[in-house]
Amino acid sequence: MSNSQTLPPAPRRRALVLIPLIVFAALAGLFLYQLRDGGDPSTLPSALIGKPVPEMKLPPLVELTRDGKPVPGLATADFKAGGVTVVNVFASWCAPCQEEHPELMKFAAMKKARLVGIDYKDDPDNARRFLGTFGSPYDAVGVDANGRSAIDWGVYGVPETFIVNGKGEIVDKIVGPLDDDKLANKLLPAIEGASK
Image 1 (cartoon, helix red, strand yellow):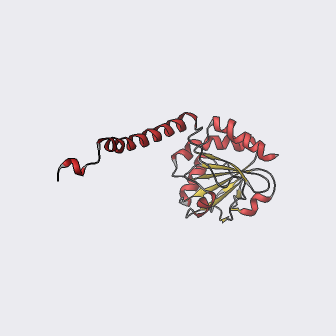
Image 2 (cartoon, rainbow, N blue to C red):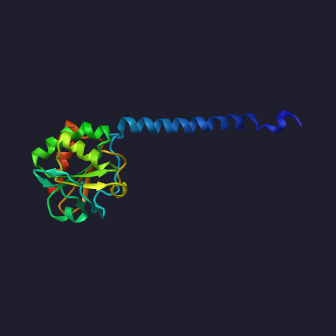
């Protein structure tokens, strides 16, 4: 048996070599399109937009106080009291959470909406120390010790911020740390939209 009998004819061999190159070129083109025209890469879709907040009953962060009063935990019923609520998922061990904390303090001082926190997989002492050092902007803090509630919210990683309307529906989500730009151009307009 000669080699010419075992190999496919030359045109078929060339076609077999070209298929991976064509697939690679198509994928490269798709990635390039997404990078140029795909919008903000930090924006991750959320299947929960337009849906009610998940069922939860998170205990308070023990011994956390604000204005001399204990800060309450967080439950689903808290979102149906009317008014817009901003939910910030944070942790003391999260460097971007420390980075965004001054923005949360600034936002809390604006009094545009109720701000609550979900403390994600955190040591309670470290969380109290974190909020004691940098200030506590939250009206309520629910402790999500095992991360189950964050999964129900569709959290990809901390920090993430959700905007909830007065009917208890999630209307928007911000991934990553808040900064001046996200505060002015994403969070505040989302709150205004949720207020209508």
